[in-house]
Image (tube, rainbow, N blue to C red; front, side, top):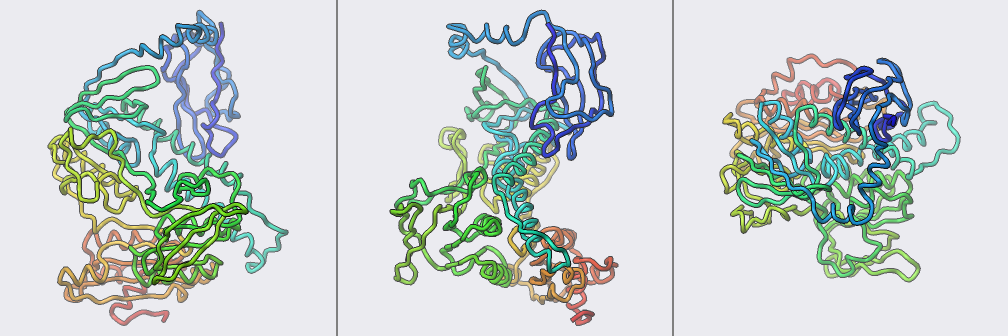
Length: 569
């Protein structure tokens, strides 16, 4: 029987076509299930296509370099049996139920086993494998973790749609006439799903290319050297010399009366809604809450943000928070700070009423949906800290030292499960540090070097020490601030709110930290991050030539301003 090999759906991301890059087989070759057949190229990544059945390559239908549609047949494999019939027979009657009850047992021995496949776990797996270690990775859900599937990437895809919609609506200001423009959130979700699928396929392909053994199932730490999991067809025991815990986090649900109401959703839920509500109350004005608020507002949702602290984005530079607040209010986002949510009650006409207290005064706000966005909690299920003698912090995170070792010397932990800023790039850098130490290469974390990026409107990013942190460490500091509105390239965007601020040690002129608010802030911050990491002086920035016209010139002007030599203010 002939089995047709087709380009699977989801491979192409947001394109309808892929390019045949390279064949790994030729007509007449004998292949086994799982063997590499060909490599394909999408707009963003290269992927590998494997044989789903064993047999002989009968006919290659497309040649290298050809562009084909998704679901197109690319070759045929001659098999002894009809795979579909064989599968149907195997999954019939008691044979099927017996296979569920009697899964095969597997035992594997590796140098390193990683529990969790997020931006910490999969990066650690690839780095370790490239360094010569035999690596296994256990992931209970989709590869890429929260970041790729329910966080960083999907929100940025939706942000791209939201920003484009907003720009088109303002097109007349730039000399462009357009007809009525409307957002379609369900189509934006499809776009988001395509981006996520493309990147996830890319990660899976990289793991496969580097011979990382991946097990899809919920992992359990049994001892300091053993992790078990149960996949769809096997019970697996993995013995490892070293273990990395990278189990991540999940949205925190506070003990508020009515928290389980059907109107209450999390940041995970909002990314799969097909139809947006007309109004929404966002409980939590931190990074996640504000990013989603700006996105949803651009799609026409009436947003009310309630925040317990005195300002939104309380972990960031106060001046930055004020700029974002002003922009939010200008865009029609209502913000109430210094309030606590006491109760969520279903309204008679649908939606929910959130009861608040502010300075002993009671307030009520209404929304068709209520988005809980007050932070995240650590995923420690499967770790069994008490049994495995894994010490936790007072907050419930896995406790580690500067080398990311836990209280058990051969077990390391990285990412959200150890607390910290809970950032994807932080987890990835921790992966490098942990693997280096497993390889006996001395490395440790310096969290002052981790930049933070908030994709609000305007964007906010900061790195290094804040003014208070620098003063607490005994530095005599001087700050230099350059307004975005004085930058020519920024002016062309008509988004002039924002600034660049440098925090400098007055005694040495060394750059200790910085904040950027405005267009491209999340990209520009890395110039300051390099300066902080390499302990550069303000003089080093001043002696660097910046291209014109660029937003980056604002960093140059801020450096000049430290000496009172700025040009454009």
